Image 1 (cartoon, one colour):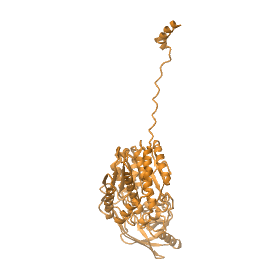
Image 2: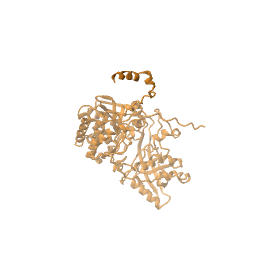
Image 3: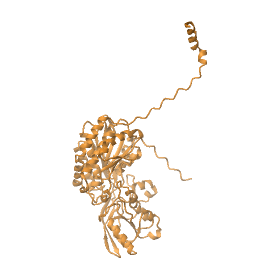
Image 4: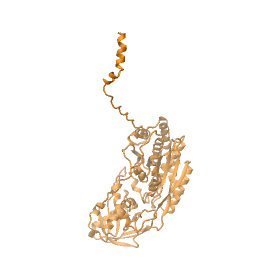
Length: 513
């Protein structure tokens, strides 16, 4: 038996034996490597819990906000208050011990408010409480005309020119109150588009009901001409008076535009119900300065210990409208994010990645600071790990939305474990992230939305009532806790959140054919 084994083994190793085997198959494809999961270590989570609890007991954001609104006050873009705000932010970052503090220039045209009055002239003479809208041209003396009312912007768009020509258009749509501010979008179109639509039909001026939810006899201002719309419509931009040296068109309204307080809007509607015609006089001494102004984004950094070139960016816009002191819009956002960065720095060793806090310039009149930031930093968008902006007052954060890659969701789950005990729920799989970060979001940066309770926010938005006394200290502390936890754990996470340079937009189709 053993004698037969050797010849059999030799036969099995012969060429003839190989020929009898089936032909070789292509090697199997290499198994695909699963994408790395983004996660946070347990020690970092424990530190985040301690930071969360410490923030709920500290009043640091309130102290910063008290300082800003008392020592600076209104910070409308291009005014002395703007310059004072930039100087304040630099001092504040340095006083809080940020590792790096610097400014980046932001240039824009300057709109100014000098005087504004309004009244029903006939048949029921009454004073009207109003505020010129940002970007409005002046009336060049009193302007008097019959009023025609439309319930919505859409109704105005459907109107006949012969019914509108030579009149003052009044759009009466009322904003609805909502926790997430959802009533703002549908209502604000009347403010942003109304003047252009009314002018196209031959109107002399525009009045709108204030885009706000209060019943106080106080008007809400806001921008009436959209820079974003102008940039999307070169033909419209070309019709404007002039373009600035920075190549951006001036977002001026084609006719004078103002907002009535809600009670005065009701008064005008009641007058129109009783009688035709109703004549109104408005006098707006407002307009654009000849020269541009250069302000600055103010930036503070807590430098990362392991990956300092990678940044988690948070912040808010430093400018405000001129009617109040800018406590809610958006001093609160600046104070919240400044305090969050400081809390991270003082809680222990520096985070692995850099925490960057930005106080953006001139958001209110065209997101100029956010655009300038993106122009400077979008080549490094992949190093911007994730971002979030605080720009909705002081109300408690109740939801976390996240526009991140699927593999980063485990890290979002871990962040939620720390935030759930202070009332934050898991939100949507997409996020806005704030106006100032919109250009970076478009460039490909991952974004989180830390949604604040805005139930009462639009009672005060863009009004003289935007003042410190409205702010609840405990709610402000909760915001600091959320921003500190989110920023710190994002900075500590192993793996990324999906920031990636966006593909360039497709070329516009050739319409000459």
